[in-house]
Structures are given as structure tokens and as C-alpha cells.
Image 1: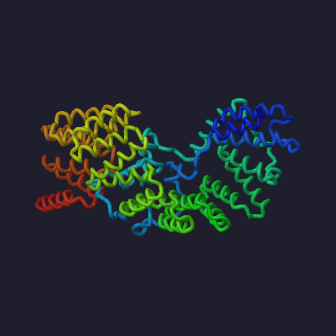
Image 2: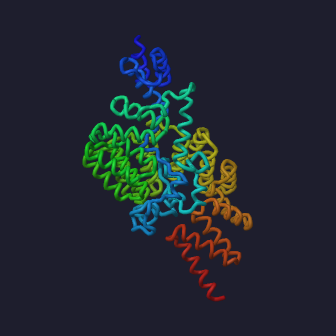
Length: 511
């Protein structure tokens, strides 16, 4: 079989390493391995194919993967209003709590947003207010270490990509004559993708894109999008915005709308991003990625009812969309409709999603829907499928809730203990264990557990309120008042906290 045809076949079947090896053998026969010979079209084709294969091996979709590091969050130079109008900022999501359950029913993240039904970049961390909070924010659900900087992540990706070419880099970027390549559009596009994704040399990629745009007389929208991506990666959001807008004037593409929305979200302008998505829907009616983008923004702004409406629109277009099904199911569960949530999670099971989180959610839905025969079997399956200690801890924590529900406090105590064995940073387990210790009359132990819970999760109101209640009972009014104020800051609408503060103020007035 013709080697180039075989290499192309490997590429089509996503067997990129085999494709790259075959292209290397073909290029070794040509006089120059570094640059394609214009006199030999076969050499040129093999060079482009190898560059594309190496790019695909480390390619990451730029649209979805976007994690802000501590550096980007705390050293952000973009000037943003300190007190934005309600519903216009992602940094203060609590300003627009409409149509969703309160934190008393639905737990919230450190940033103050309700926990979503689907784990995606940025939902874990949100935007911490202080450096201490930022350092405590885990990178993902799987590691407790925060992201130091997104630029550092791209550098690590670049070093990992060196493994794909152990004999040294395929293309020596310092020797490239970018102006020559910019005059050959087919070569330039493959080379840009290689430099941007494989080598992670954004500056060189930007130089090549600028020269290529100039050569195309600023009429090629593709190059404008690439320049915008380079500016975005460098943190120059306003310059990126200009490039994406210019590209949209020439050619309206779904990806360009998504890139531009990413810029506005980074600038903390969710309303502008929503309007942009709606403009995109006018051009591309029923486009799932645009509908999903709107739903995500509404969810981040605590507007759960609008988010659910858009997730339902997503399912009308694509009834196998996992994120939409999971988020609607989660919303039904926290809206006290476990039977309806159960239908959505069963749908995910029918689609082939088979993991610990799904069985954990099925177990909870079965318990609250009073289908007790399925509850324990679902949790057993969840424990057997758990991939790490954090997942095991969550399952034991939920089993503790089931034990509390059936009145077996000894079993609940053991479950919460097991949750802490698996993950000793599980603030909710500390809080619930403290309540059980208090019922047994172990006041000092309960206080110690609550202090641990409140230090691990200052955004939760329950440990602060419970500590305030215990302190009030034993006559420590000052500590009780301080903890009650923290509880009020975490959840201003909590009626019991307001009553406790009012009662404490009356007692202080009598002194």
C-alpha cells in the first residue's frame, strides 16, 4: 500500500502515533527533515500530515477547558465595579437568587453558587474573594491542590508533548522563516496548530497568524479567530474581543460566538455574554452548544429556573445530552421531587453512563422517594465503582443521612466516621458528626468538630449556626454571637439565625 495513503488512513482512524512514525520514515528519505521540499509534493504532504498527527495527540478543545488559576483570579488587572448591579456579575452570584432552592435545601460552593448537577471546569472553584480562600480551593474534585496559574498548565502540557517526539522536536521553531510560511496558507494553518497546541509557544504562533492575516489582506476569518485565541491565552481580553468581532463580521461561526462569550465571562460580563449567545441563536437556531452556554451562565448567576428552561431546550434538540439531563435531575431532586429526578438518572443509566456519582444519586433519589429496596443496592454499587477516596467519603456521608432518616444513630455515627477516614477534609461529615455527639451529651467534642467544619468550609452556614446554638446553651454568649453573625453572612435569610441573634441582643441589653 502507498505509505502516504496508509498514513492518512491511520490519521482518519485516530491512530496518530502510527501515522507520525510512518510520516517520519517518509521524511527521512527526503533530503531535509526539518522543512518540506516544495519540489517534492509527497514530502510536503507527509510533513503536513505528521504535524497534524502530533497536534491531535495533545489537542485540547479551547472552548470548554478554561480553568482560572490563583494568579488570574487575584492579580486580575481588569477594572470591575466593586458593587455591581444585581444580576450583572459572576463574582457576586448571590445578588440574583431567583427561582431556586435556598442554601437550607441545596448546598452551595465556596463562591456562593448552588452545587450543579454536572462537574465542569470552573464550577468547583468559582471566584474566591480572598487569597486564603483561593489557596484552599481545590483544583478539581480529584485533588486538593489549587491551580497556581493557567499559563503554567499550558507549559506542563508542552513538556508532556515532548514525549511524542523523543528524538527531539519535529520542527525547530527558532530556525523557521515565518514570513515564507505565511505565503503558503495550507502549510501555515497546519504549522500554526502545531505551534499553538503541541509546542505551546503562543508568541511564535501569534507572529505567524499576524503575518498570514496580512498576506490574506485581512480577509480570512480563520486567522482572525486564531489571533483572538492567542490574545486570550496571553490575557489580552479586549484585543481578543476585537479580533473575534471582526471574524464574526466576515463569517458567522458557532465556535467564534463561543470564544467571544468566553472573553466576556473572563471580563465578568455575563449579561453581554447572554446577549451574544442569543444573537448566535438567531443565526443558528437550536444550536445545542449555544443553548448550553446560556444555561450555564444562568446557573452560575443562581437563576436556576431560567437555567432549567434552557437545559430543557437543549434536550429538545439533543435528548442524549448528559450535562442537561444531570442538571435537570439535580434541580428536581433539590426541589423536593425525587421521583422525577429518578427518571432523569435512570435515563443516564440507560444511555450507558456507569459510574459512582450516578449510583450515589440514584441511591439518594430512591431513599427520598421511599423506594427502600433499591437504596442500599445502589450505594453498594457506588462504593464498588468509586475511583478515589473523595468519592468513597461522599457515599458514606450519604449513607449516614439514610441511617439518620431511619432513626439508627449508631449506624449514622459509624458512616460519618468512615466518611472522615476516607476524606478528613469533609466539612459536612464533621458538622453532622458534631450534631450526633451533641445528642449524646459530648459538648466539648461537638464544639471541636464544629470548629473544624467551619474552618474547612467557611461558606457553609450550618457549622456556624450549630456552634452558636451550643455556645448559647452553655452560656458562652460572646462566642455564640460571633458564630451567629458568621452564619448570617453565609446565609442572610436563615430565620433561626435571625431569631438567635435577636435573642442574644436582648440578653446583651439586659447585662
